[in-house]
Length: 574
Picture 1: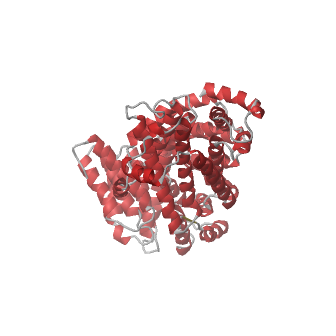
Picture 2 (picture 1 turned 180 degrees about the vertical axis):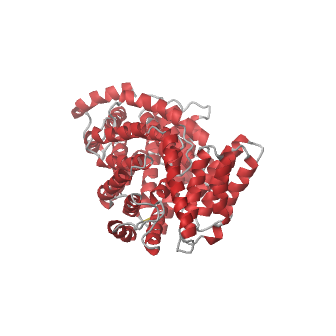
Picture 3 (picture 1 turned 90 degrees about the horizontal axis):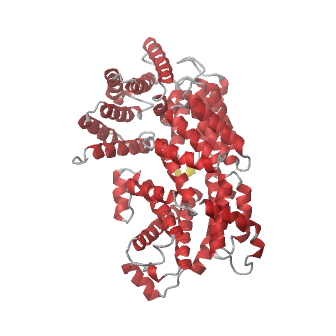
């Protein structure tokens, strides 16, 4: 990528001599696209846009690069204007590729549907047009999921993604056919195919088994090892998409798996990639942010906080990246029990971003509630925030957002039980999988356990007849069980989790606690090297409860845990 990047800088200074009436030559277009990526990685987002936009109506790689920038702005802001701009730019890129794709008569089109396309018949330009067209299809389909609540639009988006995936499969088949074609000796085409196939396989592999079977039936595949291998191979090439593949790996291992509650990304692999990327882009805000995330997951919370702040200070062109850092700073302060700063960054995210205001406002209220003793009523400011929480509810693709439903439910619970919530900051930290970080920090874990023990002592002295009493007790016992498990006090942890499970029919506000306790008990048995008991408990968590808060999050975690058990015992199945 370095040689391509250096050539592209020369290209910038001599672009005036390039064709201006029809289109830019492909080699120069690739060089400019590489230069634009390098600009972004060095925080020069405006320069990247200025480089790409003038040619985005002529050159397909300029159009793809520009529409990708617009897509990123749209998904980071959720602003209607940004989404509309992204859609226009993607449609424009697709028009350019349509003009350059191979033209077939209707008989040939029908034949291709049955026999597949013979990519050896395509010119290099036509191959790249097919590749860029597939990438544009994917961007457009993803935007359709957040743009329109109409079910028909949602289905159309899914069909576009399927069409896109089938294109990547065709490319891959031809690359590996053994025949000499334009596809299998073009590094840019190969890495683009690897990026698409890798991303698809990783994302589909995360889905629970029953959904995965349906997707496989209609032609999708979700092999995680294959997907990661494709991205890793492409990430070390000297091609346009190499840095994008590196960023994809980092986001998958450091963000996606942990947000879903799976938490099984390869951090060592990420640190190796980050070392390489930061050597090339030492002040790159994207890599500083991801490096902070890696430190956070390792339990180096202070170092993570410094890197997040450094990322914010590194650039001011894309404030959307600041919002990502503010979000992470919420959790780096939460795990330390610094509730005032956690509330401060929740408020910054609430005020400055277009993300879920319901979630951010509830989190701010929850963290401020932690400044009072367990069971003590919250103050008037927090009460007002709890009343405001439901007013910001959103829908994406026609559906409520699970974490928003959770936030609204907890705000309503607070008001229904005399303006009280039991340790809401620790509960929301658990929801966002922050206890996996606490497990890396023995001192912080012990501090949290002391707070939980104090809450348990308070509950035992409180009236067991008050509204929500058993729900509060079960929350405390669930979190205590997790802490004790991480302290390798397995017997005590098991007792806490079983206490929650046996009370599941008595829970009135928070029935979600019982299936999550079953799941955590299954994870305890994994640690105790009792795979049969672990499997039974995990399947019970998945199968014996329905219609509870954060159900899909639990299913993701159970799916991952069962898959890991199957890998360790290949002769077993569930």
